[in-house]
Structure formats: structure tokens, C-alpha cells
Image 1 (cartoon, rainbow, N blue to C red):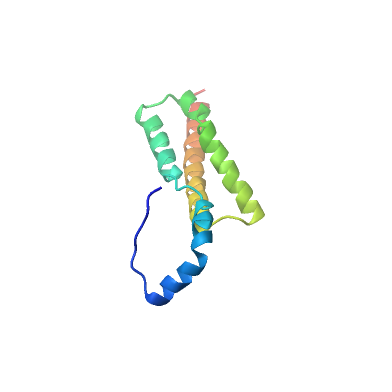
Image 2 (cartoon, one colour):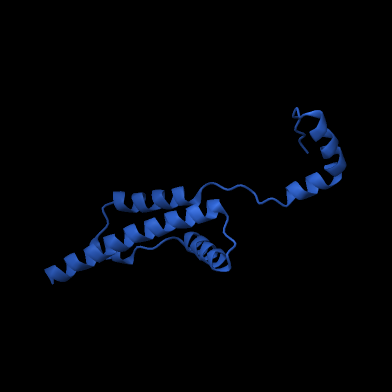
Length: 116
């Protein structure tokens, strides 16, 4: 296991000695950092649009299963009041993306309806 060495004031060193045994166990409970999923969602949407999809493809467009599961998890945490500030910001980005794709689908649907 890697070790990290940092310089701390004497008073903090004494406090850390008191909790040393618990510290690594506590840190092990922290969630693993993950790449910002919202960035991947923006890339996914832009990649889709970059291929000039047909109107029908636009209307059928949806997020991947993993993206939908993440959105559902964030919404559930939001309902239960357990969102961290970072998760709240992430959820806000998902709302923006949803608004963008909904607007795109609405305009596409109207354009198709006008033609037929």
C-alpha cells in the first residue's frame, strides 16, 4: 500500500497520532472518485448530432442505460435529501441536457408534422 508523507504542525501531528488506527479505515470508506459523467453525456449528445441524424433518429434518441441509471440515482438522492453539492451540480447539468434534447425533439416533431 502506498504511503503519503506530509508536513503538519506539531499540534496536528499529535492529534493524528491519536486517530492513526482509525484514519485509514475512515478514508477507505470514502467513495472512489469518478470522472465527471456529465462531460461524457455532453460528448455523447454532440457525437450523435455530429453525424447529422435523421429526424426520426432525433425523436428516438435517448441516453445510454448507464446514463439513465445515474440520473435515476441522482433523482432518488435528491428526493431523500442526500445530494452532495457536487451531485446537485451534476443533476443541474442533467436537467440542462434534458431541456436541450427535449427542445430539439419538440422542434423536430413540429417540423415533421408541418411537412406531413
